[in-house]
View 1 (cartoon, rainbow, N blue to C red):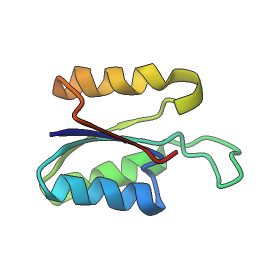
View 2 (view 1 turned 180 degrees about the vertical axis):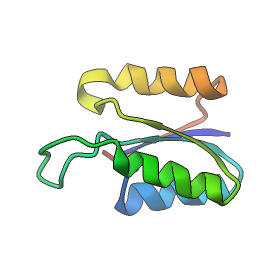
View 3 (view 1 turned 60 degrees about the vertical axis):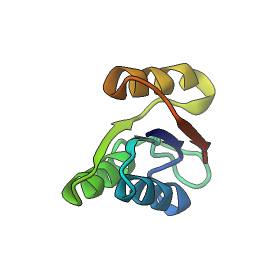
Length: 92
């Protein structure tokens, strides 16, 4: 399965990402890296989750598009990298 998870750089989104990967899913870890108040941007949150998944032997890629502004590009990342989307968790 291919799973896209938005808001996946921390907290529940990160936990969902890691657990789906442990169960064999290919995961698109999508997070713009904003603070809890919505300020700023950083790629590190999503990238750290992907790194953790890969270290555990899973398959994952990061995506840093905004759900609000570029949600379609998040899905394009999944299709480009894994060929399809089976599950979408809109956690952002």
